[in-house]
Length: 130
Image (cartoon, rainbow, N blue to C red; front, side, top):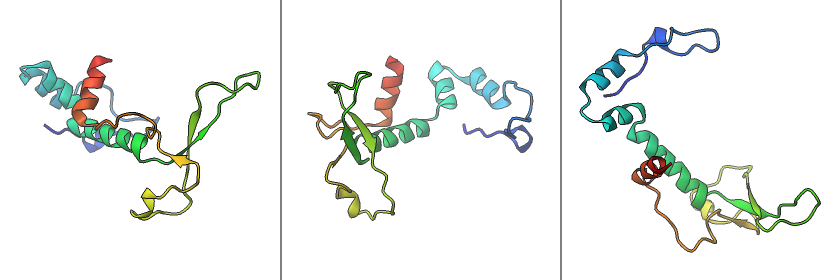
């Protein structure tokens, strides 16, 4: 089941939209669902988890970042560094994406002993544990 609000129910900014109420699609899903997972997947479709998995994979393994030292309030170097994203000023081709934009560039998970394959099921399980 796919649901979208009708035109007069859509959000129109801070000034309006319809009064909040349960939609007929939600009533239908809740009334006919045999298991709670049906209601859960209606509210959070698998496409959402697929997008989260894709973005998480890109964040960890594709984004170019630069490692920087963190200082405490006294100006002493802290043991854990942090990463700042490197924003490229020009649009890079697919071939150029594998070439570091600067000498100190790396990916957030380069130093990790293992690369995880992030799938929608992985994201759903992780949310279930939380």
